[in-house]
Image: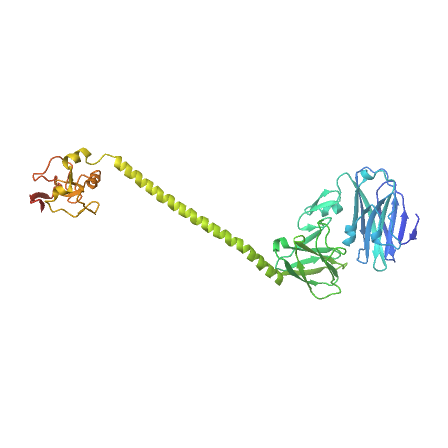
Length: 459
C-alpha cells in the first residue's frame, strides 16, 4: 500500500482478485478538499451490473463527500483543487448536492469489460477539521439496479438502470423522501428526523394563482431551508446548488415569509428542509396565503372569463327561445292540420239529409220571391245580413236561411237550428210544417195563421 499526498489527493493502491468490496476506513481531514483514491483490478465478475456504495458512519454536515469512479485513469483535480474541476467517468453529484450520507455509483460492467483498472475516488469538502469513518461496498446483479432498491415496496420501482420511478408522495433519486403538499389557508406540518430531509410542495396547478405568500415557523433551530423550482428532471430537487432562497434556521429565529411568483414554466415550487442535527427532530409548520396581486389578477382573470360566459349564456337563452317557439309552432300546425283533416272527413262523409232530398224538399229560391213576407234581417246560422240577390232555402217550419248555410247544417243535423223541428222526412205535418219533435210527456200542436207558426205546449 502506497500513501502519498499531492495537492489534496490521497491515493491508496489496492488490487482485488474479484470485485467484492467491504472496506471500513477512517480519515482525518484537515484541508478544504481531499480526494481519497482506491485503485483495483477486478476479475472473475459474473454479473452484468455493478453497484459501488459509500456510506458515512458518522455523517454530519461539516464534511461533505462525493463518490466518483474512473476507468483506467484515476480521478484528477486541478491545482489548487476545486470540485468543479474533477475529471471522472461516474460521479454521484445528486448525493453530494443533497448532502446525503449514502452515495451510489451504478454502471453496466459488460460495456466496460475492456477496462483493466477501476479507480474509486472519495472527495471531501470540509468546513472544519474532523475525522470521517466510511464503509465502501460493492454488489453485483443480473437485474437492473437502482439506489437503495427504490427504498422498498410501495415507494417506487426500478424503471431503468440507476433510475427509480417514485410513487406519490415520495420523491428523490431513491424515493426515500416523502413530500407534503401545501393548501391555501391551511396549516401543514412537516416533521423531519435527525440528519434527514423533508419536502413541501406548492402546486399552482391546483391553486391557480399568480402568486402566493408562504409563511413558516419551526420547532428546533439546527437546519437549513432551500426553496426553489424543480427542473425538468423530477429528481433535481432544491439543494445547496439549486435554490431560489437559502435560510439557516440556526441563525435566523424569525419566521420565514416569502412571496412566490408562479409562471407557466414554473407552476410548482418546492421547499427542501434539512435537519442538520444528529440526534434531534425538527418540525416546520407552513401556510400559504393569497397575495394581493394574486387577488387582483384573479379578479381580472375572472372578469375576463365572465365575458365569454355571459355571451355563452345569452346564446343558450336565444337558442332555447327559438326551440320553444318552434315547438309551439309545430303544436299549432299539428292542431290546424288535424282540424282540417276533420273538416275534410266531415265534408266527404255522407250528409244527414241527402243533397237530392234537400233540393226536392227545400229548393233554392231568390230572397226577393219572399218580399210579401216579413223576413229577418240576417241569416241566423252565419249571422250575416241578407242581400237582395241572396239564395235561400225556406224550411217547412217557415224559417229561411242562406242555402249554403243550411246545406252545411243538414250535413250534420236533421232538425231546424231554430225551432228544432225534424226536417228529414217527406211526410209533412197536417199544417205543412216539418214534423214536430215527439215526446211521450209533451204534446205539440202546430197552427199556421197568416204565415206565422203558433206552438202550444200542453202537459
